[in-house]
Every structure is written in structure tokens, then in C-alpha cells.
Length: 405
Image (cartoon, rainbow, N blue to C red; front, side, top):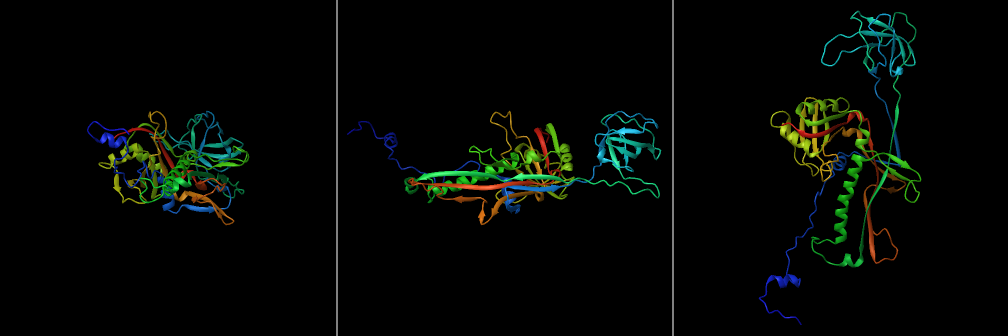
């Protein structure tokens, strides 16, 4: 038996693992709730059960108000053919204006369409007498109301074509396994619960974060034999994939003026009063800085476990939430730490499969493998999808590398 011949210190106690330790009752985790989009969708009841893994709907835009000229057209009354990029935007009787360059003022030449042949318009120039103008290649043309003569024949109709949209339900699984011995063993840091139960709590947060990530970066796809074992595999649609129209590229320093200009595009369609802004931290910093002198920024009470800033812009109110998932890589060279996403929550729905008595909404399944092993195999599983409707109702603020206070 070994003996000590030196003074007894804590070295011996610790080396023998006999010292009584002060161990906290809980295991503390980083980012305990970093899935604000999922939290908001649940809180606002933007959820719906569906009966199929393939969900479709149709969207229809208003008739086009802008067209594009293809070729140079002289300022000459005899130049009566205007070639456009898409002749389906016009019918006989339509009038359009040749607009001035941004930052200048002019009435603009009004032109009436006499007939349409594919993308070639036969026109009547200088209607109203404001003057002939050169129509350059790639010149935008503003379509205005038609004009018809008395007792004219019945006009051709012009109607927008519905566009089919689709998304799929994606399966996300978060597994955990324990031996029965581990389940039966008392451990530190459990606050009176078993490690198995605590694993479910921890895994639920991870599972929620996975679903939040899918909402941001998901891309809709389906392959009926594309899985690892040749079974069907699907992915659902995400925000960055879907939002393409209202994207403002700051390309550097975000100013208050640029932010307000972006809010103008964000509130152009859909809910004109209130939208949700899910922003990278740098944009939240900018908003807080502007709150001193520009924006009306009101910290709302913590709701749904998140601090929400209510921001008043000239065009509507934005409820601002910081999402730490919008971040760059550890070297700050790549990533999404410089964007913000504006959302019309009325056009965003969480879908989950629920049919024939089987509900595939998020749930903890316990002891799913019963193969005689001396342990338990549990998992959290969700078969879900996102329906992002009318993408013009949303917007993205991109490439914010700094801000001006």
C-alpha cells in the first residue's frame, strides 16, 4: 500500500478523485434557442396539416406595367415599328410612354399600338403631341391604359397566366441511443432527470434549429429513386431560393437612406402595415444606432422567448428579430452574416403530413428499435415543408458589410 511522506494537499485528493465537487444542477448549452423563424411561425399559428408530400398552388400576378424595347427606334414619325422583348404584354389599342432617364423630368412620348405580330408592334407615334423621342435599345416602356375609337370592333383580351408553384415535404430525424445501464445510472448535471430525458430536450432544440436552417436555405426537390437505398427523397423550399424580385444589394455600407429605400420595396406588395424582419446581427446594430436620430425604434417586451424591436419606417412597421444563423464562417470570409430577410408572415406556412390517422408533426418517438439490444433507441422526427407564397411580398437586404450611424 502506497504511503504519503509529504504534507497532504488537495493534489492528493484530486489525484485520488476523492474530493467533493460543486457540480451545477444543469448542463448549460450555447444558443439554447436560435430558431426565431420557427418560433414565430408556431406562435402566429402559421401551420397547416396536409395529406400529400407534394403540395402545389397557383399564383397570378397583375398585368405587366413595364416592357422592354429591343432595337433602336428613331425619333421619326415614319418609324412605326417597335420591336419589344415580349409582345404578349401588348394588344391592339394599348398605349405606352417612353419614360425619361431617372433624375430628369419629361412628359414622355405617348405611343399607341395599332397591331401586334409576335414581338413587333406597329404603332402610331407622338399621340397627344408631346414630341417624338429616340427609343434606344433596352429602353423600358411604361404601359398605360388603352384607347379605342368610337364604334370600334371588340378588342383582344389580355390576361395574366397563372403560374404553378410547388414544394415538397422533407423528413428530418434526430436520433439518440442509450444503454439501459446508462439510463439507470445517476449522473451529475441532470437536475433530477435522467440523461435520456435531458437528451430529448437538447435534441429538440437541435431539431428545431435544423428546421430553421431548412427554411432559410432549403431548395425544393424530389427524386423518386434518389435516396441512398433508391427510395424517394425530398427537400422543401426555402426563403433565399424563393425570394428573387425584391433583393437590394447594398454592396458595402448600409445607410439609413438605403434601409428606407429597401423598406419601400418590401411594403410594395402584400401587408402594407407590418412585416417581420429576420436580420443578421450587423443589421440589428445599424437599426439600434439609427434609433438615436432617425428611426422610431421601440423595444417590445420579450415575446415567444425573443426580444423583438418594433421599427417604424415611412412605409410600414418592421418587427425586427436577430437570427444568429445568419452568420459568416469562422474566418469571416464566406457566409450569410451580411443579409436580412423581410417577410410577410401571411404568405408563409409550415406544412406537416397528417393523414389516415398518422400525424408526422414533430414528435419524440421512444424505443423505436426493438431488436433485443440492452438499450433504447429514440428519435425526434418531422415530415414537414414550407409554403412560401407570392415572393414579391417578401424581400432580401444583401451584402451589408458596415453601417453608417
